[in-house]
Image 1 (cartoon, rainbow, N blue to C red):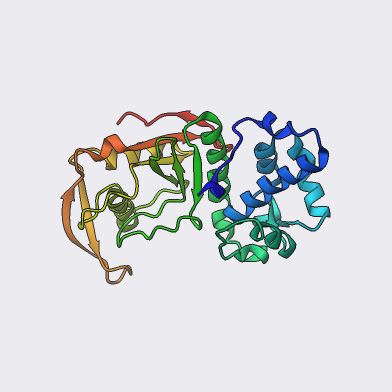
Image 2 (cartoon, helix red, strand yellow):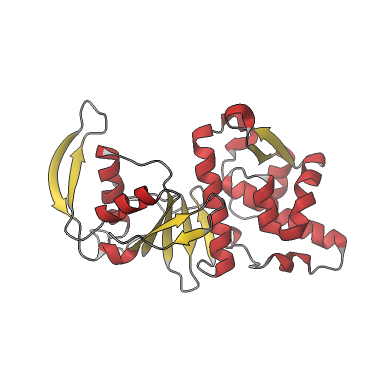
Length: 272
């Protein structure tokens, strides 16, 4: 789990090494591990991660064959950086847990997920710098298996008191069955298992850039709100099986925060 941590919480901490070689290795370890965990990143995010030294580090890593830069959205407005085979080998030689790194072919990255992933990265850096989180896990790092009907978050923040917080990035509103299942699966992830096992998450935080979306989602988690439970996954087969009510305890364990495009929190949960 320590491989999902940012050891430093301040950019200047990355500039303490007097030996340039040691400092370079330290920057490489932080940046390459970060990209390995998330799949890809961008030069500005690496700069945010490393502080001042990140301004030139990414370009040097590309020239050195550790990273590859690729235009990955419409008209290639966003340039993502991914690990090369050389970079993957370097990371995996230095860690106990390894994962399938499918981004060796960056053109396989779904453009529709890029803004979502990058916002999660920025928000995670800010959360650790502010002390809201102590460690992080990406979706690919989370080895714990989710129960059927349980929400698997976009990222997990772990506090110093070992509280697990599921983090969801919501940029486009869900409707009908998808929306109802978002609510029900989040409640399931916050609930103890039927066999008595504790809940996988003690809290959820939903981050969005839309005030309207934040208000709508917050209202859906208000105690006593009707919640439709669906049966069937395809549109043709899906039917409402029953309607339940949102439990009273849920609202105290979920936040809806507005953030800007850089992942900075603008406001806490909206009033509903």
